Image (cartoon, rainbow, N blue to C red):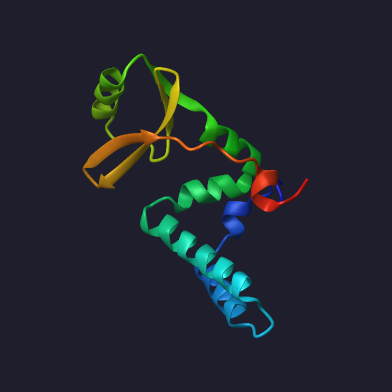
Length: 135
């Protein structure tokens, strides 16, 4: 994926992208793994849209490297979980997936329901190269 910031968000059309992915999944020459990957991409885009994060995704498309840096940056650090939870409760609308540190360990801000936010231990971030198999 290019990191060229040449108006990627204006060019992105969710409906046509999902339609194109659907057509690709129907291709007879595709392996079961290819079809599963395409279907996962469709589900991922639908999830992004349904959770109100399409604008964030479009920002990500404009500059993948800067978006990845933001995603891995630590938003706040706390000495203990009590402090972190007080901070979380004070946030009007926490950023889903924001990284925080509690006693030096990484956590992610997530929610179970619209009104219920909490912190979970953050998994390590793989590099873009690890995700794509590029070197």
